[in-house]
Image (tube, rainbow, N blue to C red; front, side, top):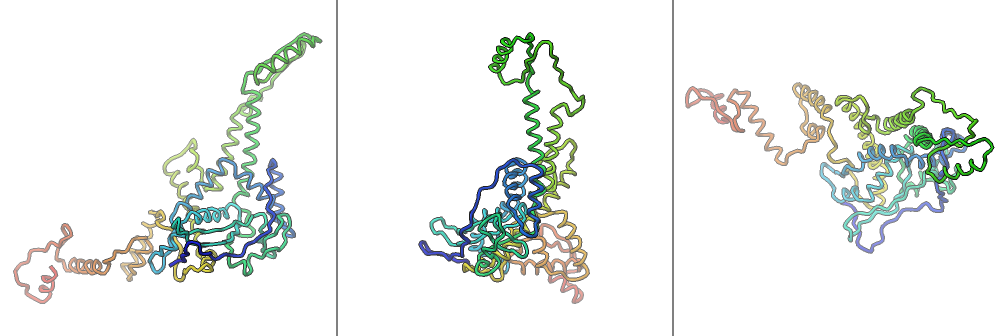
Length: 438
C-alpha cells in the first residue's frame, strides 16, 4: 500500500534548491554561426556552458514541424497507463500515483531528456488529496542552463554563465530528492534539428521577399526628363495605390528584369528547400517521413517499414522512462514512505509486435517438443492473462491429450466422441482404462 495523508496533515518535504537566478531565454535571430558557437561552448572542457545551446533549443521548439513530430513521439509515453505490480498483483495505491495529472507532466518533462540530453528534477512533496481523491506530486525542473552534469562538476550553479559548484545534486541530502537522467556529454536530438530549422526560416524569409516583389503585378511609370513635379505626383499616386511593387523612371532610362531561365527563378526552389528541411526534421525525431508527410512515391509496404522504425523509437522511449522510474524515482518515493519492495513499474497493454511474437512462438514451440517449458514463461512472454481455474483446465487438457494418444476419438463441440467398441465389455486392463476415461 502507498502512503495516505489526511486532509490538513503536513506532507513530507524535500530539501529545496533556492537562490537560482533564472533569466529569460535569449530571443535573438539565430543563424548557422550561432549554432556552431553554441556547440563549441557546450564542448568546452574548462568552463562548459549550455546557455547558448539551450536558448537556441527554446527558439526552435516554436517550429511547427518540431512541435508536430516531437508531440507525436511524446504521445507514445504519455498516453500509456502505468502499473505497479508486485508478485503479479497490481498495487492500486501506487498505480493511482503513477497515473495522476502531476505524474503525466513529470513524465513529459523527463522524456525531454532525449531532446535536450540531460534533465534534473527535484521532488518536493508527495501526498494524497482527499478532496480530489488523488495523489499529488509536487516537483520542480531545475533550469537546464544552470545544471552542469559533466564529470568534475556535477553541480547546479546560481548563475547560468559560470560552472560554480553551488549545489551538489549527487550528494546527500540533495541526492535523496533528486531524479536525473541522460548522458552529460549528450547534446540531445535538438542539436541536429536546429540547423534545419534555421535553414527553413531563411527559406521562408526569402520566399516572403520573393512573393512581395514578384507575387503581385509590377508597375512601371515613366516621366519626361527633368520633370520633377510630374515625378512627385506619380510617386504619391503609387504610394496611395496599394502595396504592389513599382518603379518610376525617366523615359530615357531602361529597366530590364533578368530571368535565370531555370527552376531558381520560381517559387518552387523555396518550397523544395522547406520540404527537405521538414523531411530531415522528421527523420531525426521519428526515424521516418511517411508517418508525417505523404511523398510522391509511396506504398503500403514502405509505410509499414517506416511505421516499424517509429515503433522501435517508441519502445526505446518507453524503456528509458521505465528505467528512470524503477531506479531514481523509486528511491525518492521510498523517502516519502511508499513501500515498493519487490515491485516494478510497467506499462499496461503495450501494442504487440505480432511478427516478432509469431517468430518467437515458432521457436518456443520447437523447444517445447524437446524439453519441458514452464507455462508461466509463456503467459509472461506473450502477455496472456492466466485463468483463475488454471489447474483445473490444465488437468482437463492432460486428460484430453491422453485420450487422443490412446486413439479414443476426436472432439465435437468440446465433447469427446467415443469410437464404437467391438464389444460392451473390455477384454483387458488397457481397454478398461480407456473405457473409464471415455
